Length: 171
Image 1 (cartoon, rainbow, N blue to C red):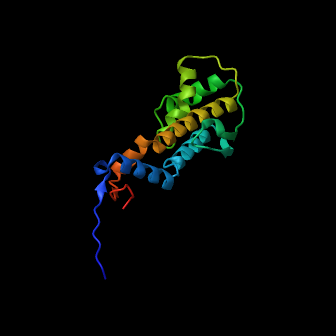
Image 2 (cartoon, rainbow, N blue to C red):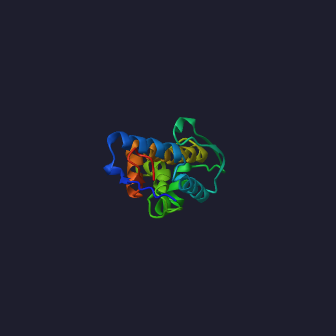
Image 3 (spheres, rainbow, N blue to C red):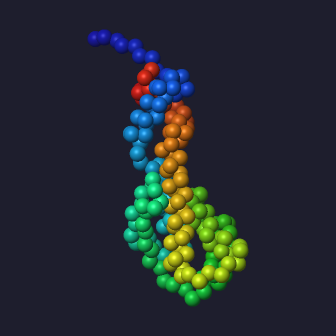
């Protein structure tokens, strides 16, 4: 048997080259989006309030323009009145959060602006809910971009107190 001693370092103790190596390895090995389930849960729970559901979707967290979704919802005659009288106080105003996740606020932002500014809305409830999903998923894409950025990865490495070999390989 032989004993091998190895020095391990915190991220801050690494050289700049070793830090970059650690960041690249982390990025390659941690491709999943940490909060994707939370964003989907928020979308589904917010839609449920309006008896709507997500029926088809394709999400690319790295680019909102490559995301697609469809929802199923019955239409209403006057969307503004429907929202103002039925949902504003509880949900749109931010008093209640259907999923408890911050993305609930992103979902309701377009509705809140519509009601707060007393804007005329000529679209359908389905169109408005699709805009709400766009806001929610856009926020998710922004979170993902940060998570995969050098700064986001550095934050994650430091928060988790990972240790590395001198060349930046995770120990």
